[in-house]
Length: 352
Ligand code: GDD
Ligand code: MG
Image 1 (cartoon, rainbow, N blue to C red):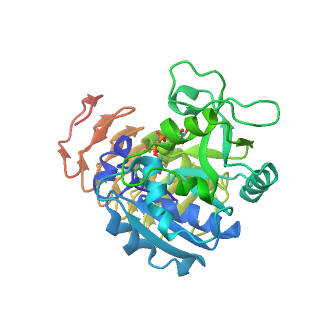
Image 2 (cartoon, rainbow, N blue to C red):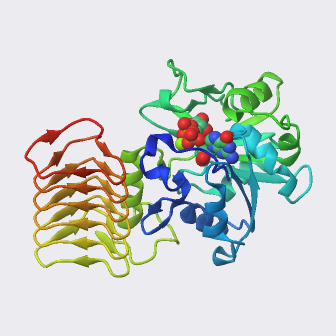
């Protein structure tokens, strides 16, 4: 699993923890991937780490909690997606022709991984890519295929996508193909490995499936992913409780007359005051929403507080920040950790 990115699009949340460890539906994001991997029959996982590497080891240890054996590889200088996979190769088990599953560490996917492995085996492919269709392919790796499902090109973040079918960030590699990725330097599988395999005539297959799929790399997508897990739209064995309109974790308290809905998760020790409305949001540990505040589609960091009557829509509030009563924060605003906004009636619309 590739978990070495800096998660810049999720700042300031990723200043204190890497993206795959952000609490998502009550557990570190990667727990959902690890639990699904175990469910699909995977027994051994290598985490390719770079940014905040020690936090992964602390969080997942030897993997026994998931019925997995987890190894950790570290890149002191980030090696990119291909370099990260290559660096992890020394820990991989199995022979040169065995299938190795590689996952981007920020994907929620309900697709049938064993069926993807099957396609890979039947085609005796070098690599088999999970493909999904999206409305905005220019933000992803655009992947046209031929009639037999064979990949004909790989166009990473092209301004002129030729199809809506994109790389979903889950690959099955023939082990020997990983061993041939250049060692000791940065490599991008998307910009280097895949295009050169295709140019060399290697069999690169697409496995298209339209099950639930989401890259949680932006604040909007992160909130949506957490809510979908809580609502049960994306099934995950790692959700710590019953799916439903809201998930209240240990010690979370919701005052009478408050409403918590839309797949909101209220983290351990979080408090929602009287008459407050929290809809489709993520409250980290010990976050506080004071009486009458309205919070929609937002992420409230650890120990952060939203004052009485404040209104947030699509906001990201860093750990320990305080939004004074009466503030209105509109879509896309991010408040850095520890910042205190005085009580006001001003509408904010840019980063602070
Ligand atoms: N170990 C390691 N080292 N991992 C890395 C590095 C690195 O240097 N750089 C990135 N990663 C990890 C990230 O942590 C993430 O899990 C994964 O690689 C992909 O990086 P993102 O930064 O999330 O890429 P993206 O979302 O813009 O694009 C990728 O995912 C799309 C699907 O969501 C590409 O693979 C696209 O082709 C794809 O469509
Ligand atoms: Mg991503």
